[in-house]
Each structure stands twice: as structure tokens, then as C-alpha cells.
Image (cartoon, rainbow, N blue to C red; front, side):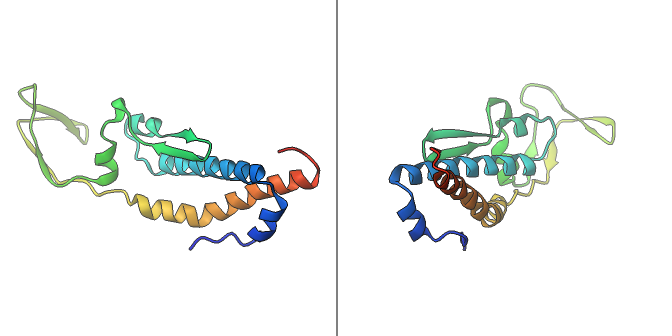
Amino acid sequence: MIQVEDYNFEIVSKALSEKEISRVLSELVKDLARNVEDLMKDITPVRTGRLKESVRSEALSEHEYRVVVGSPEAYYAPFVFLGTRPHVIEPKTAKALRFEIDGNVIFAKRVFHPGTKPIPLWEHLTDLMETVLPKVAQEAFGRVLGAQEKGEQH
């Protein structure tokens, strides 16, 4: 369960106008999207850097963001994050596959790939929401309430 304990939302809703609450929610969603983007970059394995570079957050509306992982250059994102089953790899356009193991170049007509384990995204995201959401929410409400106390427009 996620709780924001430092602010009584009844007091907040009375102290802030609908426009100010909307602004806080907009900031909150934007900050959370950035945190999720940072998390995704942190847990993305790096070989060439293309997959990590493909991680980005996009605004869909004032209160809606999405974090995208993958691009035409990093089309393999689902395989990395969802894992793969064991499978056979065969060349499509060449006569043989070429790869390196411990610095040795190897050619093969077919190889058996043991598969890869998925990255447990939901566990990482759940941990992030439990630790970061309360802090981000308190900061967003604190900025608006602090600005209001000082008589500033936020």
C-alpha cells in the first residue's frame, strides 16, 4: 500500500483551488514519469547502449505520461525485458553464424541458445512507487502550499 502521510488531503483540498490541485497532479505525474524513466535506464543491461538510449518519457496530456523502451535501433527490447525461451539460431542470409567466445571467433551453421531470464519490471516498479511516490507527492504539494503561503503564483 502506498501512503502519503504528511498531508491531510481534506485540508489540502480546502486550501488549494481546483486549478492548483490540477497543477500539483500534473507535476506529480511528470516527476513520476521521470523517476520511472531513470529506473528503466538503471536496470537496462548495456551492451551497445542502443537500448538504454531508447528509454524516454513522453507527455500524452497534462496529466498523462508514458515511458517508452525500444526504438527501430533497439527493436529487441521485448526480448531483453520479457526474456526468451530456449531456441535454435540459424543464419538467414549468410552461410554461417559468426560470434566470439572468450576472444575466439567461432563460425557455426546453427547454435542452440539456452534462452534468457526476464527482468522483473513489476518488482522494480512496485519498489519505486512505494519509496518514491510518497516523497514526490509531498514535494509537489509542499511546493504549491509553500508558494501559496508566500502569496506567490506557482
